[in-house]
Length: 178
Image (cartoon, rainbow, N blue to C red):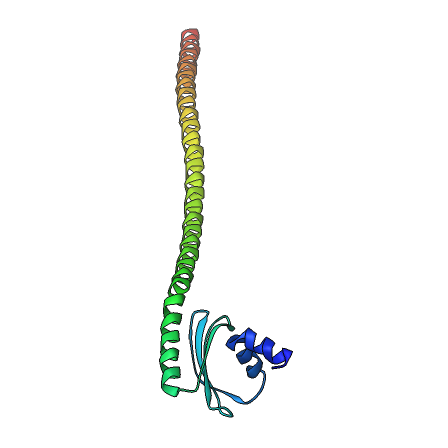
C-alpha cells in the first residue's frame, strides 16, 4: 500500500465520497432534506457500491459504504429518520424566531397606534383647555359688557330725565312769560 492509499484508507468513507462527488461516475438515487440536515443514497456503478450519507448544510457527517442494496436502503431510511429528529429543534427555533419577529412587529404597530392616540388625546386636551379659557374670557367679557350696558342705560335714563326736566323747565319758563 503506497502512502496516498494509506492516507485515503485512514481518512475513511467521508473523504472518499467527497472525492468521488467531484467526478461523474456517482449517481444520486435519493436525497431527503429536513431543515439544514439531509440524507443521500448514492450509487457507484463501476464497483456496484452504495454510499449512504448523512449531512448538515452539504457537509458530510457520516458515510456508510456497502455493496448490499437492502442494507443501503435500511441505512438511508434510518438517516432520513435522523434528519427529521435533528431538524425538529432547528425548525422549531425557526418558527419561534418568526413568531417572535411577528410579535415584535405587532408590538411596534400597537405602540405606534398608542402613540398616535396619545398624541390625539394631547391635542384634544390642549384644545379643550383653549376652549375652556376662551369660554371663561368670553363669559367675563359678556359680564363686563352687561355691566357696562346697565351703566350706560342708567346713564341714558339719567340723561333722558335731565332732558325732560330741562324741557319741562324751559316749557314752564316760556309758558309763564306769555
